[in-house]
Length: 582
Image (cartoon, rainbow, N blue to C red; front, side, top):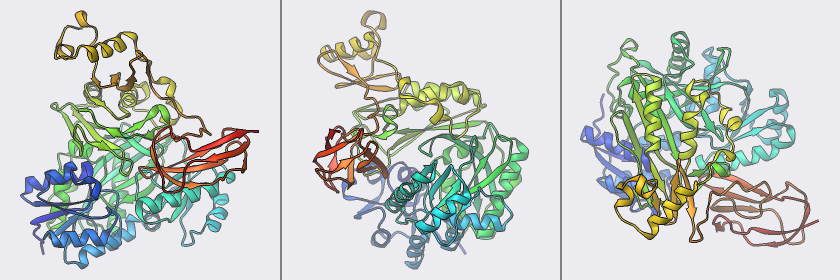
């Protein structure tokens, strides 16, 4: 029996909320959204037909109440927040609303990483060695870590996006990693359970998109390669994977379908795998939601995955057979983040003084922001996704590189320059990345200096503004330089110029810096005046955009002053503590 969807409540924000709204427009479905108080004027609110304020995007009860008040008959969770929360799915269903996602029973069986591991093992699918038993206390995890072996990962059982994940090289680091992963997981997903997984070195991260209807039919739509990562979070994704041939594609696809069937899955989902350099592969998890990188699959398959979600949630059967799925061309997605690669990819905030992304044939841009919008520490640092599609991988990468070169973002530090570097590296061009490539190959020393002629042109544009600066002859006036107030863009990197003809890019604060290396909220202060501390000892713990960062002592000494308290919001460069060296 079908369930006609006339008005959809989107329980999310940002670019995914905008993406779902646009799919609804094509289907003539009314759109309602929720927003926190700080986002009354956000783009997704502007585009929606109706909106309601809630205290938090994590408050499922308030969101369901908003859906009822706005006369919605279905709820789409997007990704992140409550998208993989079976309790929220139950709340929606118990209110008589259509849940655009897998049933709560399937989410419990497969959406939870621990349950998914057990499901895969029961289906005969290999999983990465680790520990995900019933007892997840710190004591048990500590004991099991010795059996699993180092290096290992502490991973959140709920959610995704690299949140609640910590790499551990030795037993000495385990307790702190478990505590940090639990805090991040609780903040991001409302669930502090973590488990252990052995690190597979030199592997690629490959995932398979699946679609399933309520009648038990399941198909897969090929794979995506997500090996380009930093902090265990994806940066660039592509489909198909340059490392996957037809036989491996068949094996991974069959494994993904088997796990989805065993879970009673309905809707769009993604099975994630590690693929070793020798061709061996292991199942990681089943993401019971739409993925951030879904556009690359849409491009090569010609299938609108949000539309498919809505149709499957309405009870319609899949009309595709596996034999109908054909991959056409190649697609690559870059995630444009508000973060500073020169400072260890720390989150960045500010006002988008200029935000100009190209719109070309073969290029798709997904964003939830506009020029003039503020980028705040409360939310994910994703600004936009640039997705190139072409007849083959080489042509696709050329198109993407040209689009990145034509993008202008000023007012907020971004990874634009880093993306331009990454897409142009020989390893990326040849398709030979593994998940550790960025950590091995990237260094802040790769950030270029601002050339004198670019600095001079930027300063001149402040003195003699006018349209000639953008359109005039480069030979007569010097290089055309994207500027916005005191900011100038060079090779994708934002520089700040002062009246004294100086320009700098901030470099990474070294371990033990006593100033805030990023804007954020103080989670903990671990010292008081008079305390004796040792080099490397944690002094203050900060949080921004659901990421934690410890500020540690640069040397042995005595604390002579503490300037912050838990709950304080601080900006970059604010002095946190005073330390008298020993």
